[in-house]
Amino acid sequence: MNPDIYSLCERLIPATYVQQGCEARRAHENKIRNLLEHRKWPDEGWEDSTIELLLQELSMMDSNNFTANCGVGEREARIASSLVAKRHYRLGHGIGRSGDIAAIQPKAAGSSILMKITNAMALDALRMTGVRSTAACFVVPLATGMSLVLCFLALRQLRPNARYILWPRIDQKTCFKSMLSAGFQPIIIENRLEGDELRTDIDEIKRQIETLGAENILSVFSTTSCFAPRVPDRLEEIAKLCKDTDVPHVINNAYGVQSSKCMHLIQQAARLGRVDAFVQSADKNFLVPVGGSIIAGMDEKFVDKIAQTFPGRASASPSIDLFITFLSLGANGYKKLLKERKEMYTYLQDELRKVAEGHGQRLLKMSHNPISMAMTLGHHTEEDVKDVSEVGAMLFKRSVSGARVVPKGASKTIGGVTFIGYGSHSDSYPTAYLTAAAAVGITKEDVDLFVKRLDKVLTKKEERKVRKGTSDEVKQGTCDEVRHETSDGIEIGTSDGGKQDTGDGGKQ
Image 1 (cartoon, rainbow, N blue to C red):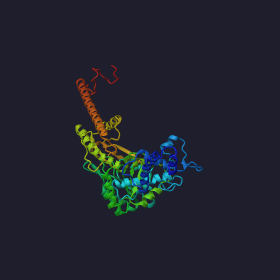
Image 2: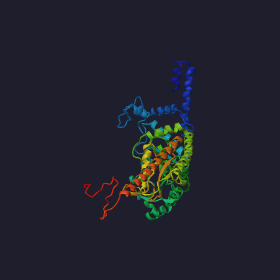
Image 3: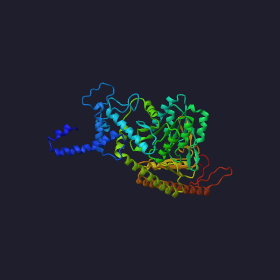
Image 4: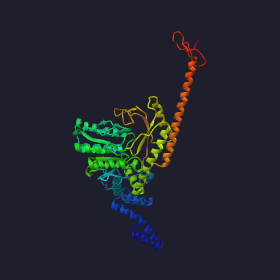
């Protein structure tokens, strides 16, 4: 409220009471002023009332909320449902314009301010978590896969003759399909097995660049965060190679923001070599609903190029979600979550090792994977495949989500390409296994419940196997007692009380 309104209020109640209310509001406004002035992620989280006040003020700046607005266009942010209007704080215009997702909308001043502030706080978050060289970023209302497509399409404008993307294999459909959807031919680089870990084959990347020609390669497409037993790519070596050969480098950093190790790898890669863009999921890293990601890079002009590649306006929902979450947590609140995640990684690792050893299995040695871990399952024979797969189904039935069970030798065809050993990131990984991840937001209660249920599932599977083995032995013994052969070699003795089968359906 402005001073005139406060003066009018003083005619209704004592001035001292009005002044108290004025001071209380001024405390909220000071936070908002600092945010708009410095465009930095606040250290401390805000109260919901302050966030809602700011959202309301921004909403009132959009034309659909003007009291005298007369809209005669085809898109006037009219919202039929009051519930939907409340859900979006009546911010109905979205973000961007037809030619640039990061452009200002004349009819949506409030939404445009929200977009700019959210992008600024996202940039702070990436720098704070380790990639200090990040020059620019923007929030896009696409999940990671489609955001990667956008990066590839932006590169196509700079390298129109390029057809290939060099891709160190990671068995995740989104990664592979992003290259196909953008219209490029993936060149799959198989990983090297080093101990239990699957690591980048740099020599094969070099060979492919020499064979195909650097000018024909759109990008090397590397990965940080991934399921064990794969570990983050050798980003520094890839980045140096890309710099030396003038080949772009795009990084899938899907849930790597929460890992200081992943972010350090990107920073070092940018410092020593070439990184054109890196993409991270909003939901996996910042605990918001699925639907948004952050595209970032070391060259502001190229990041702008990606933003301009996006066709049309876009939903503001992911930006609103991140805007609220950034302000609610504050930078210190997020740092606390990251610290707790690291602690839970060590705790989960210790507890999973105990379960594994208690069932004659072992925890795979994954020193280079800071989020995901794995334990062996089965004894690596063909008859184990069904048992291994059933473990996953049994866990899911018991409300365990996120754990992945990978049998030996499974295959899957994606976009006409068949992957042998799908799920294990390798044609011939030596063991079946189960993965679990210590991702941001995980709690000690989550870990304790998971290992308890996993232990019960494995125990139940072992008991079934023992019962089946005993049953088979009894059947075999009974058959041996009554089995004999006629002179022509036809087996007629059975275990059904001595009845004979003469080969005519049991008739005698």
